[in-house]
Image (cartoon, rainbow, N blue to C red; front, side, top):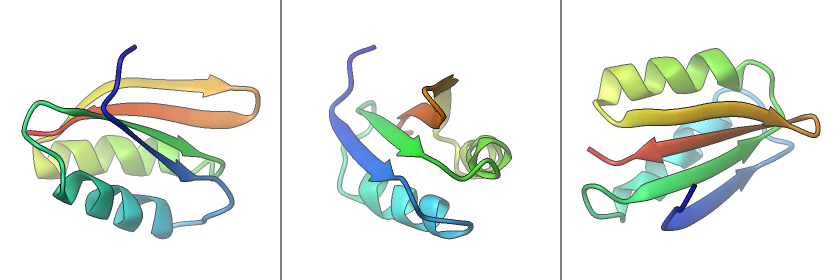
Length: 75
């Protein structure tokens, strides 16, 4: 999937992956896609809830080699 920006939240635990994802999205234009990589298993539920609460679209949520990869489209 194509993306405009990437944020690596590896090694961060709740709530830092969400807090830093929010900051990463802040300077992006509407419609742009952010790729987030995380190692915290809790980020799977957290990212889905964050997307629902903020109106940003969670395009994909997968696991690759022990890491969780998310694609979010800014609202």
